[in-house]
Image 1 (cartoon, chains in turn cyan, orange):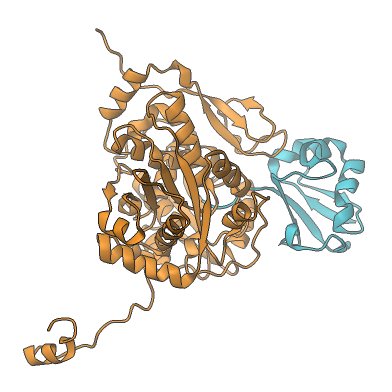
Image 2 (cartoon, rainbow over the protein chains, first blue to last red; image 1 turned 135 degrees about the vertical axis):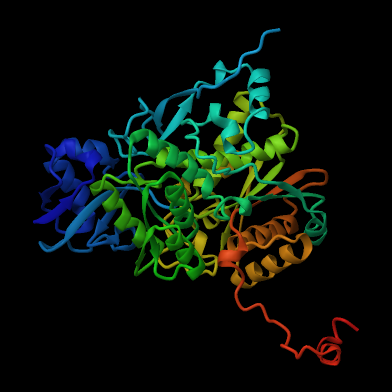
Length: 88
Length: 414
């Protein structure tokens, strides 16, 4: 299982929890896993089966845009969703 | 005829740029429905153009003269942010072959960068919310702006910067009393940390939890340029791009000036200037208007623009395209040369980000982007005295002796 950490604006989609568990073998399968287990969350963050451009995904602190789609998501990994905000 | 003074903001609410939902101006900082960015929306049709222009012209010599087009009221701190000069630059113009060149010298704000503008708006919002702490993720300039504004208002400040930030910028932020947190890694890693902290702490993180308000301050550069040109839009404006917030809000300002009929002008082309070592927006424009690809490891001496994953990157590309503008990216040697050229021709010393703008203008001019008779405005957003040119070679030290001077400096003072 992978820990999925959510920012406060999204927590109402998962009963107010800060983290939830998700089972996804690799990065590519993460959106489908979110859609299957947390459809309310998926409705907010997924567009056409992928994370929308205003959501940034981090895997153990690494921006997922710099990772290969087949990056494995083992049980020790934390996946974090944050609003795509940066810079002044 | 009786006249009325416009003292209210025309703020209607906060609208999501992604899903279009309009909500109240509450404490949200992203859209609760889709996590998209939310931005103030104004009832611009409610203004009578003549009355609005008159009230602005009677207003304070600061960005607060545009209060009707801002989302918060001036908190009475008298910090004098904005209303910086728009300087004609004939000598630089001759060097760049640009006939009507102007410099928006925003290096003259309280902490010597344009970041004082967005922070002024964010601070006003923080005070309205009763917050006791300001914070930010910064490449350097924002840290000083937040630290100064917090000191002025009697708030605590925490500023987070990459470890490699220029010493002058961290030292000044510390002098204002802020806690300066230096973080190993790039700005984007600092940003991720602050994204988490902003969510956990009750602080006013200006570029996270106060962002919908903060970003509005960046509109005021273009408001001022138009007013200083006699309520005419410049034909071209060259904007340094880090996060892209300044560029997208420049486009917003153009739209609001047109919608309120405050300013005329046939067109206002917006151009992006980025360093070659971190040019995700310019590259996207020049590669045929594609989506922005983030840069993992920015490498440029223009550290204030070293944001590899700009939040307003795609928004910038769209705004440039809509304005029929363009973009340029320039290498470190060109940036150094441009900083010196500006200083030597116009007497204005800028940090490397300013050199990026000058060098980009040179490239745009060489590509024939600017036409005869068109006004070209260059945004100079950071002062050279706190992050200036490195390794400018100096002539030798001499004894206090006229012969020694003649010997060592005969070449330049025959």
